[in-house]
Length: 320
Ligand code: ACO
Image (cartoon, rainbow, N blue to C red; front, top):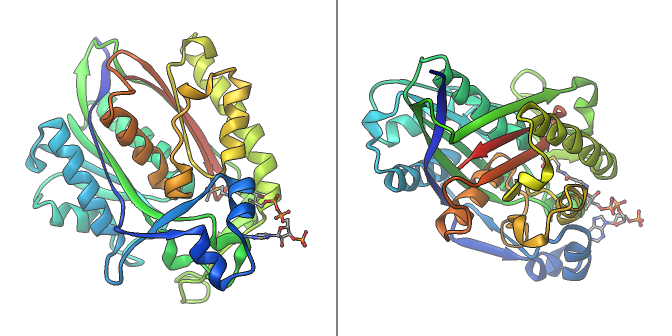
């Protein structure tokens, strides 16, 4: 009998400080109207001084563990998706492991920027399906505020900090759980979205740089292809989808995907207005919100999709 990874709990965490568009407009040549019209973003959360990626991740993980009714000591695998680790090394996942009081299992980071959660889910799901872990924690956590050039209005208005986590448990012969994951990359587009620093180049952290318009065009094509691939692999159609939980990069990209799938707006989980783009954290933040308030119910079909730097992109279907 084949093994499936069941999502048994979700949790999320947002830093306390909220920065509105109006606050940004006080010190940048921008406006609430421009930001809302082009992106759908109204505000973002920003980590406090001294609050680092592993703090956000730990808080989200603790909430996911509580929701699942699982003790940290039962976790055999921690996969943390982040592009903003505490340090260049070791993996931030190991710090989260220690902060959770875990002394066993394996913990490592996955770096696929905004596609990070789909990548991390794919990794953990494959460990579970291979019988190498029974209970896993998959986390997306980011502190993009630390890699933004706050003088650059074309990028700094777009991103926010946050974390989300899910607990996966192996279940034999279940109709529920992760149905499939589909991940892709194309390094020819490396320069469309990158941070101009790093240990092997400048030895500084650097700032996020982005060709926004080009990314926008590619996002719609690539996401559509990944979604078709996921539906085809499971012999499902867009009509079977109960919830679209997309990466939250831009409201216009989210709406374009909803239209392509002919989904009514009520079936699309949107958090970008309040969270902005939290990179690898955006999907688990949205999942935690929609599962937490009872919108996503057991047995329903959830489609997730994301694209990020690399470029990387992917999709996953989960029978909740
Ligand atoms: N406020 C006011 N004006 C601005 C701002 C701002 N914050 N930012 C840029 N502008 C100006 C530009 O300078 C430009 O002015 P100009 O015409 O005088 O030169 C004008 O607005 C238009 O700029 P564009 O970049 O062409 O605007 P566009 O309509 O493409 O919107 C945006 C920009 C919102 C970045 C859009 O391209 C986008 O969302 N792209 C996708 C980005 C994305 O999703 N990135 C993340 C994906 S991967 C990941 O999540 C890490």
